[in-house]
Image 1 (cartoon, rainbow, N blue to C red):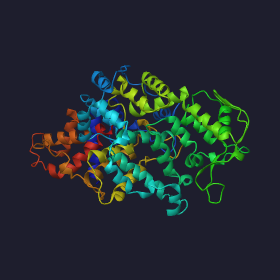
Image 2 (cartoon, helix red, strand yellow; image 1 turned 120 degrees about the vertical axis):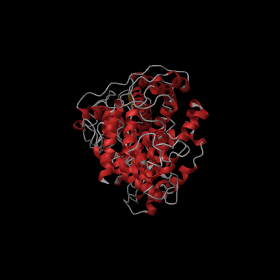
Image 3 (cartoon, helix red, strand yellow; image 1 turned 30 degrees about the vertical axis):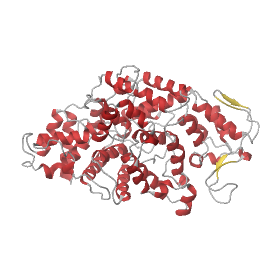
Image 4 (cartoon, one colour; image 1 turned 60 degrees about the horizontal axis):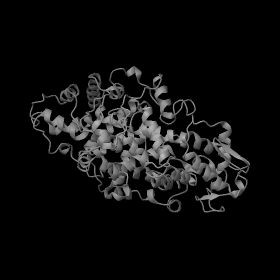
Length: 572
């Protein structure tokens, strides 16, 4: 096994030295055995670099703390808004250096708006058209989703309400949270509502309540079902109001512990700093204190025997702090304990519709879909759409897809580890099988080993979405192992595509044709000549050698795994 790893390192290092694009090179040259390994910076992915108060946002903190240099500038892009997404795709020229092919904008769209493009999804978008596909994805309830439903059903506690969770597992047991994380992976792999699943992942990090902690053992899954999934393509105002009454948020950020006699500022601070206006949104420490005052009285009982059923939201008027409150431009007499809940709802609506919140969400969306340092013109345009649409999310996404900045950003994002595993599973065509639980549990362990299990970031700021945060040798080696397991189908329980059928129906007569077809099947493009030569050197045959004579049927597992290991696949 060690010889195989060393050989694969040499191939990937060769690809890096051969001149990968700007972002790809930043990843590839930090692979073990590659060039410039002295630049490698191990990142502790369990906590934010520098802390949330050291920088304007978490992504910037990672980019600067990892490199010791200021964050990169936004990639050059035309600051143009087109009449439709298809028009933007057709008329935007990609000028940034990248190893990715730029001839088919549909592939770029699917790299960003799904958990990984496949030949079938590319064909679907070409058949429907870009605009019709986006319209369809923004109305997910109309899309049948049988395979994803089958995958979800393999983890019954993921759908169980809190009372049922408490009835079925011991107090404090993590089985329901683990079920929810694994069930989430099945939808990321098999759902036909891919843009919706991407947005669910986005909001799960924005309003982060990890399903991996003692405080939410029974209510964590319901938070992500009833708050995040219910509003992922709806209104942020509705989502924020729902989170403000959910037991999981109250427990996770200590809202339930806050009383008029002993105010806990945790939730009030994170609401401002992370969920809405942002650390540079213009609030003061006095505003943080008043934010906490406003939210007092919102509780949930952690044990049976309280004035409300265990684990349900309850407004305890006798715990609410009364007196005039002011947070930025919001003020209220807050004169009665009985009216405190309504004051809190008005406050949440104010924050949701604040211009600084619009910029926070626009920047984070642009970071997810466009570039680690998104173009300011695009952020401005998306923030305006957010405010004009009354905090509705779909109009913001539509503006983004109509913008030249989106279509010009090919190759400017790197997949996080979880997304890489999900994209690989989609690329090799795994399907639901007789033991979904067993196979998905293996995928869950891989993601956990890389610090990126679904909804498991312990800090309240959610997983970072810039490549500097995920740049480590251990992560890369674990990805390599997961790719080999996925291609070989070593974790049984799903219906797998045999390695020698990954490029079925494509030219495979010679070694060169076989390698090109594997690259097209898994990465939707052929590799640049120097990178193709590195793969051929690994096979040990000239490109014109007949595949059978070179033993390709027995080598295809290794070659296919290498294709997935490459920077071509690492890029989002």
